[in-house]
Length: 376
Ligand code: SF4
Image (cartoon, rainbow, N blue to C red; front, side):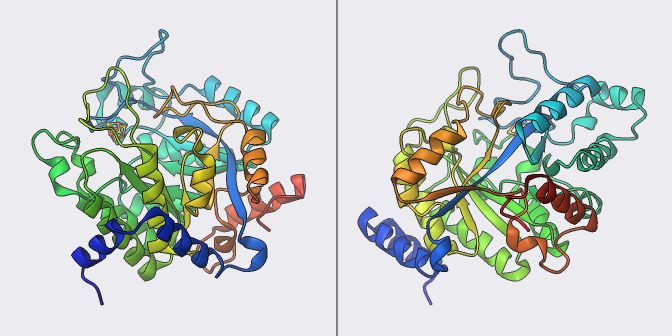
């Protein structure tokens, strides 16, 4: 058995040609009809609050970052805005509602006051209630609001088809003086690993991923992929891993000497496939790898993630989502078939303990309404 440094050395010296050959062989282990399927989820984002207890060096979202076009920071999303977004999502036939926010926004007085005004005890209660009301209109919540406790995860599971938290990187030096996580207490590796472990113990279908180009090294990426593999081996709950590249933005603190390239991002996606195999889907956000979609397919990716027909990628607002038709054509011309999925992967719907009765009921309604979703 290879130790970590031997593994890293093996992977570092793997040529792209060899990596692609290995990926091809891994894909061949899938049933024939699944080998060329690429999935995506039609979603929309509810950005609940920009307020965040962390100050990540690369952040473009939290309350300290000046917003463009007279856009204000959201203290707490207004009821009217929620209703407007829901109506548009239903019109577009979205099935996933991505609930995102800064971490622990109710640590800020202004957020807590707004919650009290609207009769919520805390932000968590607000999120739980919102999840419940989304299910009532056949939208499946996927919540990613930062690090939560075991009890909070347990309570949200009932109203979430799946949940997510990027591991980003467990590289310790990122939390040191001058590192991107220097002022981010929620981003310590222990906190992130604990959250993902608790989600496993609670049987929550889970999405995690690496954020590349934030000061980590190749070795850290391999170490984190092996860690994800170990957690999945133990709990069987990781449905997908996102390989996301940092993109430069005006107004943020972090300025890397050498920004991460799309080539390096896609090589990491290939390495993720090689390490994680077919049991976990590998996703790259298509808006961050524009013009490299064909290469991404060759690197064995399985999924293009949540694509919104009408809301922004709030983390990378300058990178518009591609049209689904456009991705469809790219897939088709390269011998792949693009298929819509739900935020909970098909194999988790009937996996014992992974899907609440409320979620199952909503999936049934969605399938009844559309008749052609991949989950059944
Ligand atoms: S946790 Fe997220 S929202 Fe908060 S500062 Fe970091 S990147 Fe920004």
